[in-house]
Image (cartoon, rainbow, N blue to C red; front, side, top):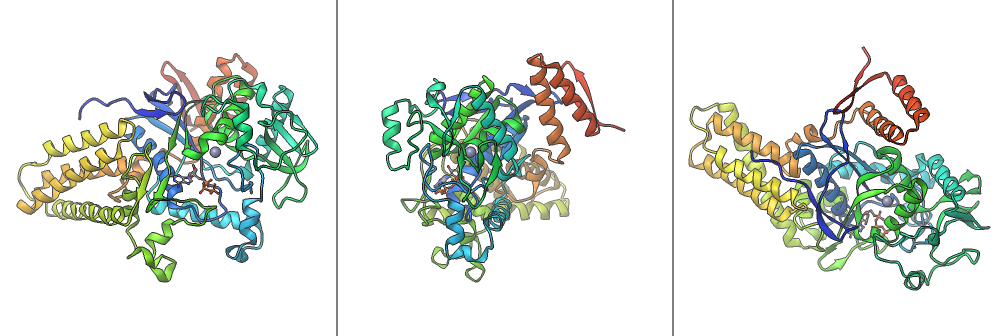
Length: 511
Ligand SMILES: Nc1ncnc2c1ncn2[C@@H]1O[C@H](COP(=O)(O)OP(=O)(O)OP(=O)(O)O)[C@@H](O)[C@H]1O
Ligand SMILES: [Zn+2]
């Protein structure tokens, strides 16, 4: 196969399509992409718009792996109840989890904790149904309260945050780069954007956003040096990204609405705390609309994976036709380019179901032919090599899924055409098998399980060790020898030996 192209993505920070160049290398010498993608707030089932954004992240991971990179991929679960107006920097309104608990659907849950557990489990189920790779780490906000509180304390100590009777706020004027991602720099527009919000009169600047909200009446609350309360939403992601990926990460992603304020606030928190750049590249997925309408959980007009893939008696939606094969839904959701708005229609779904069938048929033909082991030449190597090369090049070029899917579909069509003309030889079938497995690893639409082989290795130990090695490299670069030694002790306690080699640290389990 031809030389591997660079991975280019639309970087929101520079507003241009750029080649992504990871800074770190994996212990085996491959480029290591450190990638954080914002997950959902689990107060309801994730909708297919959320999944469009998660699928973008999935395709980044698959494409990077197909290019031969190592990937460390973190996607969180927001299980702290944040506020219904969190889309303005200083969130206000009702708590989303509390509101969900009080709703009709919430009656089945005793507490917000049960509700969060239920929707987290449902998220993971739908994630697997749509054949998304499991992240190396799926951290929960509620399991990282200590780290979030430490970050608030750090920001207060460094003069970037201050306490009032109601909470602790990040002081925006203390961070001159605020606005570099979204372009929202103007204090007046920012204030206008927050007009409807209940404000704390003790705030020093109207743009200052909450790091900690004091609220002894909140359903989910923790104790901090600032009393009982809960963290601001923006805090969890910068804290968990840095914990699992290091001070500077390569790529951070989410849906277009997160650009401001969420990601802008993450940058301010992280960079004010460490003095280092937070994420080198940012990517944002444009919204999914359904039949021309914007869809969101809080509006209540959303479709879930379950609505479209289950039979009506199991909870599927009758008005959307026969239940779809989940991989057909996946195909439909990735059929538009992530950086352009995407309107999903009934026709998108029926076309996807048809195209998906071509992969099912090609896969069946190849299995038969492998069993039969017929003699004869390999007639597929040429066209399938070209088709896969085109698909990979298109994905590397800013995840151009329309072109990649067309090339992959043409390849599956070539397999079927050849098989219909004359049953495939064993040699052709082996080539076709390799092609379908590569397409599965890259796009996840064949459903043969090859994706598992492409998944970032995750046996827990590897993830922990790699995180520690990144922190150790950073500690050494900062000449923080005490920290580097402490990390070495932690690695020792995990039962691994580390060897420093010219291509970076290598590790193995102790004998
Ligand atoms: N219609 C959509 N299309 C694509 N991505 C979306 C859409 N709606 C939300 N997202 C993205 O899904 C991810 C999870 O978001 P979140 O759980 O906040 O969902 P939400 O539907 O926006 O909820 P809410 O309406 O309560 O804000 C975020 O990255 C968000 O940007
Ligand atoms: Zn986030």
